[in-house]
Length: 136
Image (cartoon, rainbow, N blue to C red; front, side, top):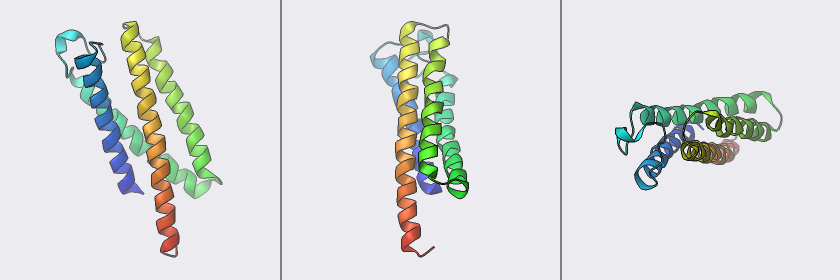
């Protein structure tokens, strides 16, 4: 399961970078840094990517804990992640930046949250089948 988690972390980190490049390079939206910092942005872009990846790894830890302790763990995991994603969507809307930056960051956070949930639900499904096949 953790190998899938690392792959999910890589995907979400890259998704954060692609989203930032699209926002700043193609749409001209100041996401995470002012225009003077160029298409890549500044250290915030890397921080955003690493934070996205860390969220995926943290979500896997939560999922593993729920699998070990909770009936219907995947359903609880999904609900917890939906609520955490909602927080990540609403949070940028309260920042003192341009409306475009607020909206794009909120949408990017939504996409990252959905990707984490969908990929990890698939990972746990595959892991469960593999565990069942191995006789555990």
